[in-house]
Every structure is written in C-alpha cells, then in structure tokens.
Image (spheres, rainbow, N blue to C red):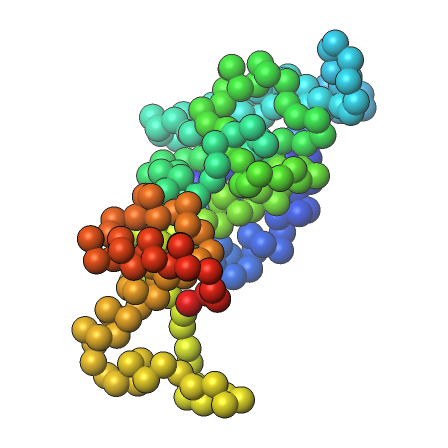
Length: 252
C-alpha cells in the first residue's frame, strides 16, 4: 500500500512513522509512506498556502491552488507507474466520524492521499475538485489535521496483511466486532491482593471464550452503550446488555 500525506508540517510525522508498527511495515515493504511538504506548492515568492476568508470571519483559510497542485502531482506520478488511482481523504471537523469500519474501508485502497487540514479550514473547491472522502477523528477541534492523519494512517496500516503478527489479535480488539475488548491479565496471578479471574487460569477454552464474550458485552454496556445497537448479539446476550445498561455500576 502507498500512502501520501500532504502537510505544512512534515516534521510532525518523523517519529510516529519512522518507529513502531508503521516503521517496521515500511522496512518490510508492506507500506510506503510519502510525506509531501505543501509549502513546496505555495503561491508566489513567499510560498503562500493560506489567505483571508471571503465574507469575513476570524482566522485564515487554506488556499485551493497549493493543495490541488500537490494532489495532482501525486496522481500524475502514480499514473505513470500504473493505472490505479489514489483515494483522496481530507481531515476535517465536518467529516464523517472515523472508526474501525472506516479504517477497514481505507485499507482496501492500494493508494491513499491524506490532506491535513489546518487553520479555519480548507477552501471548499478543494473538496469539489480532488477529495473523495472527508474524515473527522472525533467531535472536537485540533490545531491541525496532522494528528488526525497519524491516527488514520496508523489504524489503517495495522489492518494490512502481515503488518500485525497475529490476525487473532486484530479480531479481538475493541471496535473490531462492534464491542469493546474484554479485560485482559498477565502474570503475576495475584497483585496487591487482586486476583486474575479463575476462569482464565482454568485452561477450559470454551469457558474462557464465553467469559471474554460476556465481559466484552458488559464493558461495552457500561462504557459505550451506543455501540450495542450495531453489535451482533443473540437473545441471551441482548438481555445481558440491556440489564447492564439499566443497572448503574462499575465497569466490567
């Protein structure tokens, strides 16, 4: 997979993309990450990338010309290499909410271009001309889209085949099955008088699986009841979830 990130602050990506899972995936040739400095496409002697907002208002708006030129330069280079076209994402507070399903969608594209929004936003003509998808990482406002882009790329790359060692770990993670992940424990079996649940020490795999499933339902009901509407639950599990939502108490 090839991923291009268009940004005014390329230095923000050196640590997150050079280390950990993304760095190892790059070293193994599973993903290629290309950081594009938007300033190189700026207008005039001063390489301007922003301007005042028509109609008035506070702050500056990102100009359309540099961003469109950057995207088109990437697409042109890509088409010289192959016939495939890149999927273009703009980080935006007004975009659709990013989640595990969206990450899985993005993972299906062989090439992504992620545009980092900044300032008061981006000229609307950018979306009309080159953007396929606007994505928000949450109902809050960041200083810029770089942090959002890091999250989007990280969540997407780790779903690529071979990036994460165990596919089972991906399947069990929170949000992969519309439920939050069950509690997990490691050694020691007793720490400060707190014991690991006995079922996890039993070696009874069916009972362990049942316990983990029930704990996932209870954790979701207590912490993110909004996710339960999308979860695939049988009648018994639905009853457990509904009782947990109605009963105030601590997390599972």
